[in-house]
Length: 471
Image 1 (cartoon, rainbow, N blue to C red):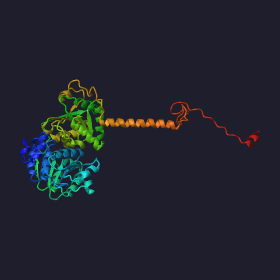
Image 2 (cartoon, rainbow, N blue to C red; image 1 turned 90 degrees about the horizontal axis):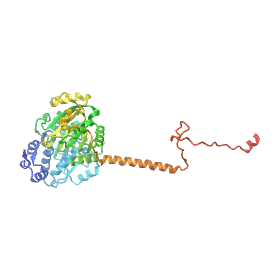
Image 3 (cartoon, helix red, strand yellow; image 1 turned 180 degrees about the vertical axis):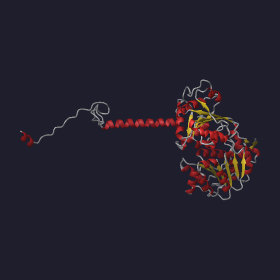
């Protein structure tokens, strides 16, 4: 590997990387940085987890200079909120020895803080298409002087239907600019986009274009599992020898939350990232995972691109992804930065046709997933799980997670309100005696099961005339 110090990178940037223990460049960085620094448009293609962020981030920061003028000069467009946060953190690291300011612009958070940073003169903006277009349309984000433009994870932009938004953004940036496009895969529409908005780009593949077919550092284990047995199997996998941080992918956000609750009940330190969670909840959950406070993360595909944690040892596909591209992006959360990883995929009986397509596209040579149950002997030997392991930790954590505490506090508050309401009702109706209640209309009993009090019959007083006539 080549050292960053040998790539004509400014010393202050090298020092910031060295302080974090980052000294040698990955192939995609080694090949793109020297070409991009002079201003050549670049298309960088490499598998996930190989350092694409520094590949485009270092040229951006260095080309802006150590003391750039206030105002947006560089724009990095990313498909998801989680990825926006991750890219922001990496570029912010590169600028710590400079006056350059970076701001993350994405939805799910209040506008005020982001607008304040823009007005303060932030020079680098990292954002998602929706919020970028929103602020630009309100005149709060001026992109006309953005001469450095990056599209990160361009293939995901395509999957999420952002190509029309990307075109709108390109109409707002400077016509004369330095453009970089980075992606793990390069489908036809992305190539067409590059031809439209880039000037004679150099296409650099740090490896084979279909990288991921032969990721030697990731071991792929494919099981045909029963839906009702998956939780138990996962509980046992999470107790495998050498198991570190683990990411579990589900198809829907409802499945994700159900699995978070189930694994927490089984005693695991688990968090979640999915669409039903507020942005602050997602950020707290991700921060806890990165810090090691929770070592299991349950996520949906939308969040996959933002999980940039180098020490993930296991990826588990609770439900099979829709195609081979989604599969590669999921399993790319492990085996990062040259480490080894394990990817376990569960294939339901109804999804065997999907696996057949993925297996053929990625040339795995495993057309028939192994039928597997939580009691299958090969489960233990395949994944180095100690014999006799069950899917539940003997002693569950005594502390509830933040979400559980919130839920418990909410339930307790509702209970208190019900008690207060009940007490208030009793105080407002002191005339009721024991045994009285609201009649249900179906008989002589109240809904509390006690017989209704006998009702007094009122007798109408007869008038004096009537009395005399009757006499």
